[in-house]
Amino acid sequence: MPSRRHFIQRSAALLALAASPWMPSLASVDPNQLLKRRIPSSGERIPAIGLGTSRTFDVSLADDSLKPLDGVMRTFINGGATLIDTAPSYGNSEAVTGTLLKRTNTHEKAFLATKISATGRTRGMAQVEASLRALQTDTLDLVQVHNLQDTRTQLALLRELKAQGKVRYIGITHYLESAHDDLLEVLAHEQLDFVQLNYSVVERNAEKRLLPYCADHGIATLVNRPFLRGQLLSHVKGKPLPSWAIETDANTWAQLLLKFILANPAVTVVIPATSNPRYMADNLRAGIGRLPDAALREKIAQAFR
Image (cartoon, rainbow, N blue to C red):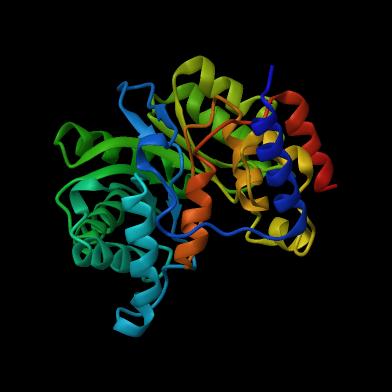
């Protein structure tokens, strides 16, 4: 039976959640508590909170542009996270990622995921070589065929690079629910380590077939667009967090949205993007503590309808 002290602490926490927004300090994330998930094809365990770089890392390499992102990278790595997802099509994001990892001396701690978005083997190979230079590394942890562009050719190339030790894992990506059947079609005929897909509290099509298929066939998943490019957070801006959120150990709407995704055991890593170190710390805390059960997930979904 809960003690009086526990009751008082819980009541105070509920009042705090209802009364005001909360943002963690940069030192509040314990890397030892961060949730990890297994990559089925290898058994390697990886932190379940990653970092997307689309738009947010597409800046110049000037110090003024890099300063806030330097804080994001340090918060991310010091918080125990590793997977950084980028792409040649994200403008300067690969070069910025490589520069930040060098500045923070954290290359060896990062799990680098990038993509191929080219047609033809020659262009695909040129893109991989450019990614290696931009990211300042000899090995890419994961290379994904971006939005299923020239999939068969690029997967054949990636298998060769994997055999050579230049790439550790290979996969495919898309960001639209309308492409989920196409992703499933490729997964049914190709042996892959990862698939990246869109999934959020308002885009739940992946729950029907794609995520169950990955769980049944040992395929790791990366989840993009968890905040629907900020639209979901705008929807609840200024609204107090529901009192029941404490049952998931969530202190902010962002954490609640990420915990909704991570509560699906087929999700390996979710990759929210940010250019704010405090938001990075907030995202990391979604990987700590309890995850919502089925009933709480439906309450979260109701809050965004």
